[in-house]
Length: 331
Image (cartoon, rainbow, N blue to C red; front, side, top):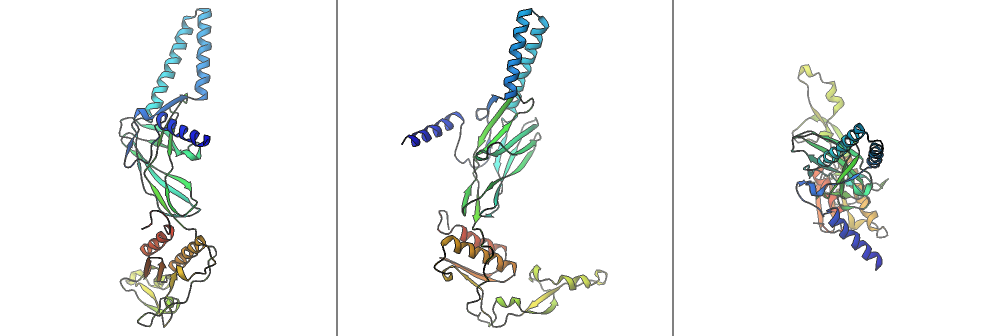
């Protein structure tokens, strides 16, 4: 009970004091109210030095000492204003976040826009959970900068972008200004493929024409290129032998399927003794292997029944179904 109250107190304090918000869609403007500033260790030492200089000037009644002390103090005040202004009025927007496999680093692309007339220098960005920011950028007046922030993934499914912290100490380093932003972005995490995977399943029914898809392994020869042939089937060695000065010629490898079984990746056909995540990892590995070998395949998982097909769109649909199987947000 005490721990819950302490967590609730910290949550309320952070939301009120540091203006922490939930996910913010669209473009966000860092108003001055969202920028916080404190002196750095160098700034505290500089304040002690100013105090010593002021005491010395008072003791010895030194006019130049007063002038130097007040001039240095004015420089510190100007640095405080410039440091806060280096973040204020910047615009932040989320970018692309391509899918990854569990265990890999997810990269959230974040855009920093500077609509003002003054350049912004040494703006550090990073996820709050990682501690000190690791990425730095300069943004020219009227320009923009894109940074890919990486975070390690764990489980499959949707991974929301963590809270981002922006920090700057420009120009003199006497003060540190920072702000927080929670982008409305998420990345899809696929199951980690099993390594090494077992051979592709060979059981299944033959197609209506009597030709199966696994028969793509049966090389039958070389023929002229026809529109629609996959690029991976081009016979590059034979193409290289043709002299481009004589017109050149594109040729493709020809395969005959024969009466072989259709490649079907069926989740229900996996051994019962395997755990759920193990089954999903094996299915993911088989999808990647079938794509690597250019074998059209049927994919079956619960209500999903895709194919037989091949290509990036088919691969993405199958891996998405595996990533969201049994998770909130699944189609």
